[in-house]
Image (cartoon, rainbow, N blue to C red; front, side):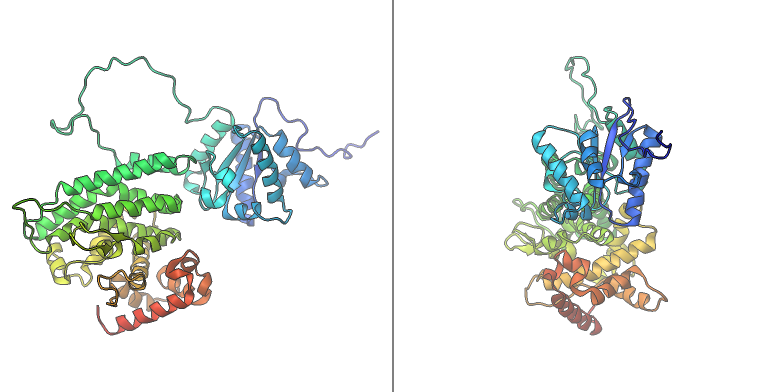
Length: 495
């Protein structure tokens, strides 16, 4: 007679017929990552009655290769938990578990290209950096943000039960096409203002949906065109600037680009480099102005107002890059030229970094326009205008100020390194609040993000993340040289 303990049940014994069966493929990146995957599996089981096949539940004595092979074949759906390490191991030729699962998945996909069996679930990084190319183009779910875990889990479970939340509704009745107008005070008939919230929601949806490049591109290009048209409507510069007129234009431009600003934070955080490049294209567009008509004129310096909107967008992308550690777009921003016809010249090409990144008023003028006596009014103008957009991304105002100071100092060095100034040989490092922060932070006890960010460069050298992602041509010696020149410049008090 067989003993009670002689039969060790397999995960494939007694699989229910009335629940979806899901195999979970992932890499053992860290104990924390393994624990997160285990929680995902447990939550699908206990909250949504999804029968998961997870190696952590495999009983002693069972072969993992058999478990993986049988699991992928038996499962109704396969969840692929994407991280940069998962992709790296998928591409290794070392016979590891992730590579073996990838081979099984690839074979089945090639036999059933139309299959929706494999669902990418992004846990870390981005879709194009955390999955192999055959997987990254499939519709998936982003679970990078722990604050959205329960909401995404619900949507994922609904999908696994073949009842997706985003299923198209049934067709309604045939419309009568009666003429109706939606207007505000008789103007802009048929148009509705798109809210920042709805715009961001759609951006998030498109970023997390593979094969949505065309829709995403058209959405950003259309928004860039709308913002530009709105700015052109107020491109009359035949007046003298005072505090009231400056605030009027500042608020108007900020409103014109608010959807692009809010979207750029999401795109830097979750988007691909290709998607981020669309923001650079939009900024170039925003720099362009219309030629003066017959009899028109402008007061010297007034056309600087045209650059307020693009300035806010430029620095938003910079702060977001620092906040989330994605720096690939920054060299593109610094190297990009803006053709003649922009706000500062009808005949010469200027760099985007010069037009959108630097102050075109004197300190005294800007203080007068802002009714303040700040030492760095340009920094105050930008940081105070952008703070509301970053409120939900930074812990508090001080952390935002830290991040803004990091970006300003980084930009200052890049400005000279990439020869962004009006005259290529004119070495001028833009100044800002980061100079005051440097002094304040050096007197603090203990570390802080501002000091630590640049201290990391000294210890990690070529492995410093901004260099690894291409800043200063990826060379520590180049960074070291420009940093030394910057310090010498600042020490002369030329700011």
